[in-house]
Image (cartoon, rainbow, N blue to C red; front, side, top):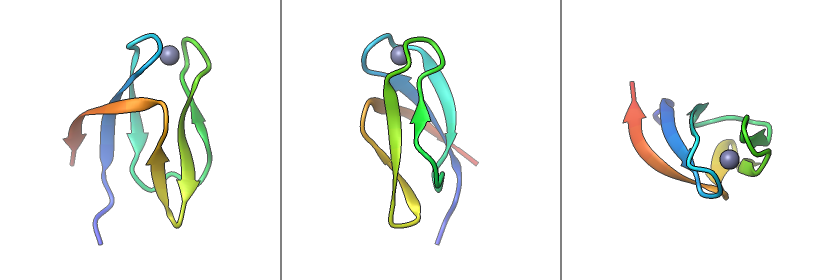
Length: 56
Ligand SMILES: [Zn+2]
């Protein structure tokens, strides 16, 4: 089981955010407020963003 951080890009405004891959709360874009992830089964489900890269 790996836990890491992901750099993601908001689909609405392209703002890049760093999120925890196992975030247990919904995360919203800091710029436009769009929901980026929802918690699902102990890991973050990406709903409004694209992964740019995985960080250790
Ligand atoms: Zn955004």
